[in-house]
Length: 285
Image 1 (cartoon, one colour):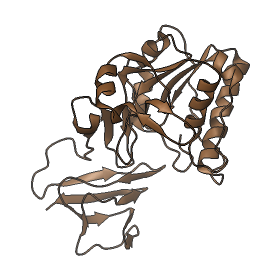
Image 2 (cartoon, one colour; image 1 turned 60 degrees about the vertical axis):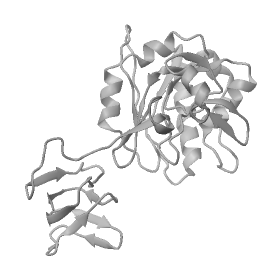
Image 3 (cartoon, helix red, strand yellow; image 1 turned 30 degrees about the vertical axis):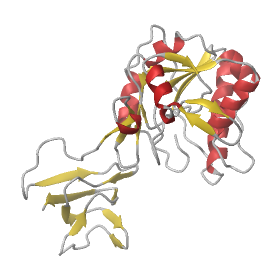
Image 4 (cartoon, one colour; image 1 turned 180 degrees about the vertical axis):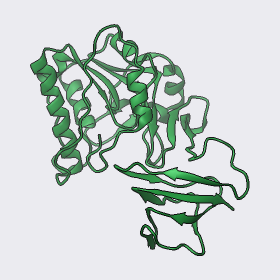
């Protein structure tokens, strides 16, 4: 789980528990215990902790799944069948250009994603290919790799440990590759899901999150319940007006405590409004 926002999405959990695997498989959920440390240092420490668990426990491999991933049911089976020492599923970065986090070239300073090369992307789609690795969101690492390589942080925190791990794997002569048929969703903080898609512009598509799964008619109110352990983003494709609240609500420049009257209504559009430890009632306008 991310150290700055230690949470686990339900769709991630569902996809983990649905994974096909013929043998018993221990599943460990971990969050960072020292959120005051630099972000990338936190992740490195957690990765090294689970690495040691694998080595001490006599396991054959480590399967890493990050908190915001949605895996296909056959992800682990497909990765385990690959001839690589480190095998990756395919997913997009959540921010900026939504590039595929599968690179055919990386060095200490830069890299080129498959989705930045149309011909390579189309040739690789659905296939297993040797790559230079990168994102650890859905990754199977064999024991022999972990015996020789520890996760490490960049001294200036310029990149995460996944980038340095891929460089170290390459330097040690291990083989790493992606199964471009193991297509994973990457959940954003707003609840949207970024999916790799060879037929879409930029080779990705966005599954937009809506807080309502059923049709809402004009002026019909609805209830949004926030997780007591965290926050929930309230937004929609249509403007909404919050008419009552028994929760803490914040937006840019305003905040409302439980019990505060919102006489004029708080307009909610596609920008983030956070609801914590309670619920609000909104209606479309």
